[in-house]
Image 1 (cartoon, helix red, strand yellow):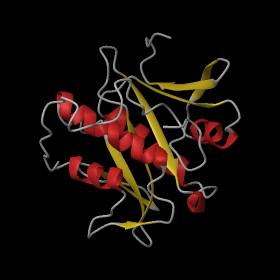
Image 2 (image 1 turned 135 degrees about the vertical axis):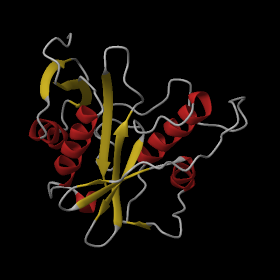
Image 3 (image 1 turned 30 degrees about the vertical axis):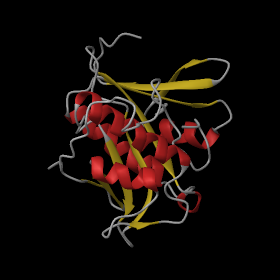
Length: 204
């Protein structure tokens, strides 16, 4: 994924260091399991957990019969996130509930973006997140609304710290994370790094 790209995921990195999912590259066989995960709801949005079959459609750029994609979806960032999710499923199984979610607008059912986790919490209870919206849905508060819901969900699952990063010049993404309660903890030559902690003993 391109971090901070206008139509891509705006926080974190969904690019797998081993490269995109490739069924011919010697990965274990992919087993599609339809998750029984519950949708996350906000006043204006429905965050729908993705399974492997959903991710395959995103990579192919072909919506399912029950999907109504907004113009511009999936972005290159969403495709990269779907590839990462498929690779994780092939290597270690479905990471749900710490996988990817579609962002659907409740008023019209359109898929306007995506967000999710890079994987299950580490040994310290830390996770990293990413998110993105199609251009037509940006600037309306949807990203902050979706991120708040995902952060509440992470906390309810026992996560102690959530991390995200964005390009130095991606002010909109920085405001999204700040509005959701995340704080700037580090800045390097390329990125600003944000996090939110619920465990007062969480290590920097």
